[in-house]
Structure formats: C-alpha cells, structure tokens
Image (cartoon, rainbow, N blue to C red; front, side):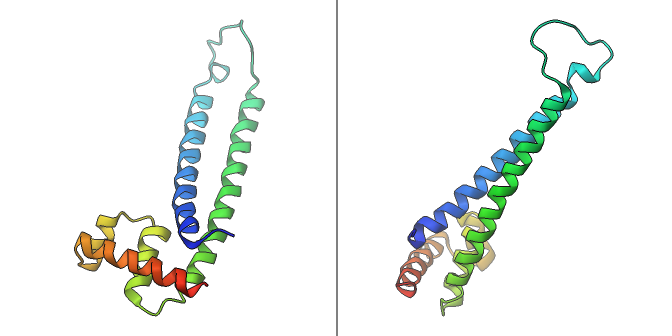
Length: 135
C-alpha cells in the first residue's frame, strides 16, 4: 500500500500523464485528418497504412486514456475520503486545492489570501497530520 505522500504525488503525475496522452491523441487525430488518403491528390508508393488502421489507433489511445482516467478517479476518491478525516479546514483546503484540483502553490496561496511561505507550512503540517490520521 502506498503511503499518503506517494498517493498524492501519484494523483498529480497521473493527471499530467493523462493530459499528455490527450495531447498526443489529438496530434495523431489531426495528422490523421491531414492524411493524403483523405485528399484527391494521393501519391502512390511506400508503405501504406490504411485509414482504418489509423482510426483504430486513435480509438485505442482513447481507450487507454479512459483507463487512466478511471484510475485517477478511483485514487482521487480514496484520497478525498482520507482528506475528509482532517479536522482543520485549512489542511483540507490546501491538500484538495493542490492535489485534487491541480492548482499551483501560488494559486492556492492567492485563493486563500495566504503568503506562499504560509501555504507551504500548512502543506507540511497537513501532510504530517494526514499521515497520523491514517496510521
């Protein structure tokens, strides 16, 4: 079982990975639309990849993204339940804002009218308290 810090890091990295996969799929889809097979001035020769094969690859990427999104949702729900155990609303807020809603530390600080240093201090305290709660 992952410790809480690993779970929180995993949420952010999985979200970044999903965003990268979505961008990659969109790029592939865009190149698919620009394919010479869709144009009338198609040049023959070279290795041919059918339009259906390209489309299937885009679909497969979408299915992989959906699997990762499902993992992310499950992990976010699990961590959200753990965060709910914290009594201090500031701790819950700092952890939710950064890890579950993907805000930067600066955004968390500004949204809560805190200094950056205070935000980081609360984050450390929240992690410590959360680790104690789940023991």
